[in-house]
Length: 563
Image: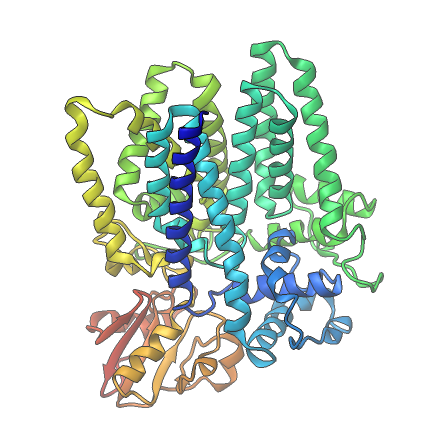
């Protein structure tokens, strides 16, 4: 790459970073903590400062440690972990950890002060992922298709939504995508830099989220295909062995090279004693008995498998505890910008039909995406498109492939309506990116009819509710809130209604009427309620709300009871 190419690439990437950081920061300062953020942040801080991995073992610790890094200079953070020492592990991972994390963030410390610092660390990973998308597209298609890919990535609401939250979804997407990119580079040119990038990103993914385990068979198959096509079997086998060794060492390093989750060697997780229903659970239990990996890692994996066996789910007016095989394809179709869907599917079909370079290029995107989606479709955890977020940058690259084929000539006019559609859909949802739904649904204002939970309503809009109350001089509100942030922390005076968060259940009671009633979309649809509470709140759907906050909290004026 000559100097002029380096300069223009630097200009594009610098501009991207500034815009991306501006969009994400401007959004996250407006929003309260989402459901999972207190657990992730508290877990990371306790592990980072105390070497204690007991808070929440459901995920490996890397991204939580990363998010907690900017909290280290703050010397006035209050933390007391003695309550964990006397808690039974099985009870702790239930309500115990939720109470502890809520108290740490909202009772003992200044929640937003900690959250803002931690959220910015995830923004940086979003910037890194954007750079990887640009680099892969440029290496494959050239500069202008790469610039198109970066523009699509920058304005992709699902990426923006999760690149500003202290969770594991964006980080896994970044590291898994980076591993696939460098594996693709390895098969084009085997050198130390590409091999190190592949092994490094892959091992980081393994200590970010347990779903990264899905990529093991994928990368081994891709290495085998490369070895067969190029007769470089020794290199393929050597990389596989290096990958296994590096992953094993990285997992131990992430847990401080200690088997027990804390300095108390007798305090261990033992979830595998309840059931060994699957081969994966049996294998993890066997490895834990022999201490082949840290206790919190293996038992955390088992704990996650148990939790995923049955989970309430909502889709377009239907309810299930088993989920639907088509949930994730449908969620992607509803929550992906139409411009990206059209270009991405065009590029995918073009790559398959042309076949030219399919094994050398397209397969490195299509196989991982297909396997990951297939595994997700068999799962019973149907609560958010974020669980298949890795498919978004993959779709962006396929869109770049379409862009490279549609440049210039008689097709140039197509870019004007596509650009208009992209900007229109982005404008409709900004800055409430989590609530994005494309125009097939009628936009974000209609999203609650199809999907809830982390697709739309994850507890993020308490600040918006408070702003509305202040603007309308509402001193008190009846509230049924879905989330773990504390309304009192934001100065919201409320009567908690049935279905209140765990920390307010004891105070829940009937509404004070006449008055305003605010209900989160997830509760309004009764996603996790049994009858009669589903009917209790569902009757409000027949009423017209006086306001909707961030597309996720519906406010009604009620003179008398509605049920």
